[in-house]
Image 1 (tube, one colour):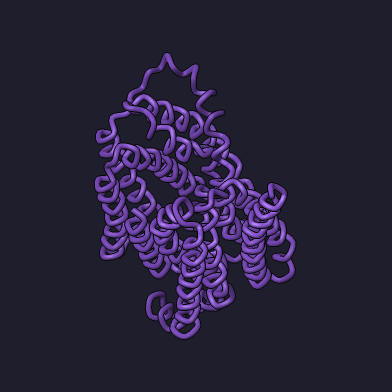
Image 2 (cartoon, rainbow, N blue to C red; image 1 turned 30 degrees about the vertical axis):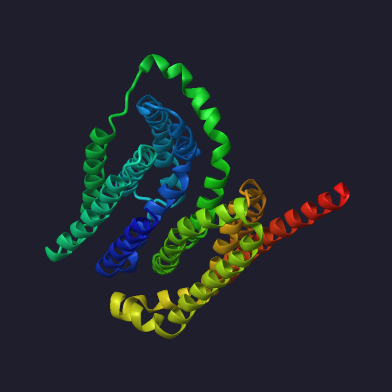
Length: 403
């Protein structure tokens, strides 16, 4: 499934590149800003429920009732979230967060939130192939619809957004009949209990989402130049595709390291070093690709209007090496059962990123935000290293005291 997610992410990037070239920096900024805002704020609908469901549904023989309960909970939160967003966002920047586009973005993002629940349902019932087919089909239809509208020279942004939401809605309906969630409305009284059980899982999900989306949304809100929003968003999208590829590799590395942690801790140390070296090498390779081929590739794909995308991507290219190391250490931490200890470094890194970006943007613009992005990754990496060192220190200390 990791490779499927990576392919789906690449399809999304291709669609974004097509839209960016077709509409130009101005209109594309409206598209990307509205969807980015929804992607970040939809946490108010999700609350870690899907992560909790992934674990809980695996322990139940007939989880259809549980799926129905989670969907009802998301619908309730989704209605509240949607009304708040459509009411508040246009007040900040009415020229960027346009009600028609924002309303469709809210609906499309909510459909994706429900689809995430259905993907979890597939995982917990061992229907991985079906899940992969549906995910790739959804992303392929989105891409084909974009190509079709461009072929017919459609210049209406609202048409592109509407077709995207319609496709997502149809995929949701088809998937609904595959999962067949059961709704028992007399059990609405149990919704607060389900929410409270899922809440502890929300921390890591929220921190990861903030890390991935915060700077793009801050640039959208703080910048008055639509072209800057477009350029920086495309640069971050390219980085996120790389993240998706690395995430897929973790799905292979973590189970192997976990088995070594249980059976052979000496080998674990050796293979952990090999794993970190491999992740670092991959990050360095991407760094070199951006360094030597990035500008030409961007000009070929996006044209001369987007030459500044490379400028911004070049500013943040050290993130490929740093993030690769972070992912490598993440695999080790999860394998040695230190998942909970990741939360503090994540929180510190996110706070540093948000506050730092707010402080430097008025003076250094994108250059300052990009420096904060790099520094926040260094903070996260140092935090993870501290967790590993501290666990080893206290383990050794406890061993000496026992002796």
